[in-house]
Length: 299
Image 1: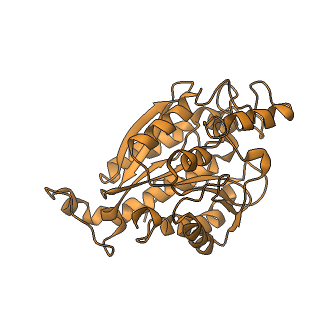
Image 2: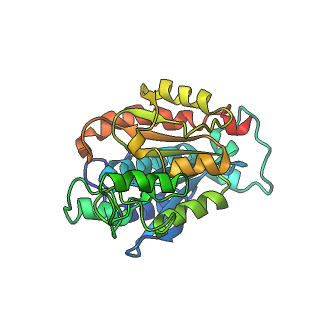
């Protein structure tokens, strides 16, 4: 079947917007919303599928030079919509939401929110403006995945000790937590949707990070092991230089619920789009595993 999501070209905010519009037209089961705007005013899109009582959040491209993760998540949204589309009319005609059984299809048990490009300005710097390949930050040089409240002071102290004291391509934590419209939008949307589990796509290393400090959300370790088995990725602890201030860190600390960072692919970021197929082959079953019935948030 024809794919709307191009998987052989570099993504940009414009290409994502075109994909979102086409997907919403082709698959009415996809609900498109704008959860905020970037520093340059680009919309931050969320694609929502399913109508279950449990909300999950998948997100990608917090870091600009990890833009291939936006392709992965957009393609995943399309593939999931293809599953739902044949039955969409029947379940939208239901007057009352059902009480799904454990055997119900995932889209009757779960509402899945996907934010494929948290950092549209930064992605454009790398892919459209041909900025430096080390560029991870947003338009004004703040590393969005170091801008969340969890351990932000520790992240600041660590980054400052390494010389990242001012806006730049990477590792500047910002003037204060949630100083950026992009991170603020993600935090607000996570709270609004009462997200029970989150998966954040990054690159690279074929690793899964699932712990933050001493927090052990119920069921997180078991689910981490399942994600590792599904993908072949290794479970690892976050390197010390990246161990605070991230979205996943904040989610675990704020809600004591399972949160995962998936380091997709292997090589040097930005990974080439030619790696897409090999990466997607491993990440797709991991994302599917996250939607299976006996997830910790449902027990």
